[in-house]
Picture (cartoon, rainbow over the protein chains, first blue to last red):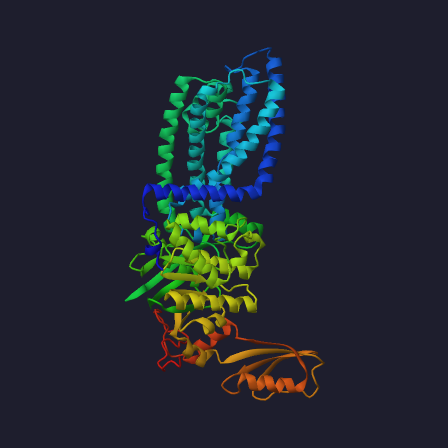
Length: 280
Length: 351
């Protein structure tokens, strides 16, 4: 029995492709369930994180005797961090995965299958995202509710748009992280690049504080760079919906995703020629 | 018509060098030094449909690198190769539908999932027809005897059980060529034998072309009609397995453990006593000088035998003997005269 006689009638079509990548996502989700306690642990960590942030910002608002800073109330600020942590803790850890594949030699299998290597990682990584996001959102929301009350600006009707921006934030982050991961084809060790990216995200991306709170000069720089589109954009729209800002952020995300996807494709094309797999 | 053709294939790696100690680490930060390692040096060979080739050599000989070039994972530094008419590193995705691979030291089955879940995943990845996939899976489950473990998470399987499932996974899409890279590594004697029998059964049933790398000469003896020995990236022997056995696998290492202390007057004729302990001995035997069964009979006459093992000499010793066989012959693909070669022996095969 050969591969030709075994082939599905629609082999090579987009439907077969969808089934393929869907199956990869499903398999990773099944595999992730074995790590459900790890995801649960991240959820516990969020309780502490949101609690500390809520206390700090309460003290800041009190010290300034302000009800609004940078256009956000204390409640909005607290819920902003819930959404920012949801993205930060749930995103696809692809750079680590690629580096491990190069170092332990499992790249030999992953590269040798009939799929797009980068789409494989996106589909595979997406499987664990839902589980982690569920835990982070549950625990984070609970703490934010207790500490700052319900989000008074929450609008159910705009949530599809917020989720779209959040999904594109995951894609943009994937493109950047996969690019860092592909550097393992050249350098093997990529933790330094990962560290730089995480620190930029922390300061300019809106993880430490919303970009609106940054000094004017730094804010201008942060808004020009793509990093605020990963954490700040979805979190800001979640707590303070603005239709015009949504369209701007959407446009910028599409542009930056296109740029990074192109760079990623070039990096992969060049890297695949150079890769040296360990272990024989 | 050959299904695999390699023509003067080369692969060179750059390996960073670092002097020992902190000073060496700092110096390598400022001025890195690189060594060029020629992992594969001008390998040429051809395989016909249905061939079962053993590609053997010691660790670091270039076996895995060659397989990775043939499966399109690595780009060669020079030379040409075609697998089923595809240039592997240029047409990797198209080729992937027609070849399977198993790397003995690396799992392809998902660790926390039972094998049947990975099989389902592969059915989607290779875009297989559902009915045909079910039939194919049933056939492989039967042929490899893995029915009892299909629902057990891979992390709970023994290495031998896992390897059989790995082979099933690599054959689900009906490849014409199977690349097996050290499939028996780490297995005990019984698991090795079971796996070899399964590979042989599948080869015979489907006229599967198998390219098997190993540093275990036992894999070659049990499975392959043709053997290529590679060392330092060069082919040093390419002939029928019977020729290798006759010339270089004639020695066996026999270990015996007695039920009582080794008698003081213990001695063996036509064999070399390698080691003598209180309860056992290790002997090297040239099977052309004396048959194994004859020696075992003699050993059993000394004292009750509790345990006995018969092993091939290590691959390094076989290679040393190949080099020593004919010092005047140049190694295939090597520009300078090589220490020795027994390439393409001319005597007819016994098989």
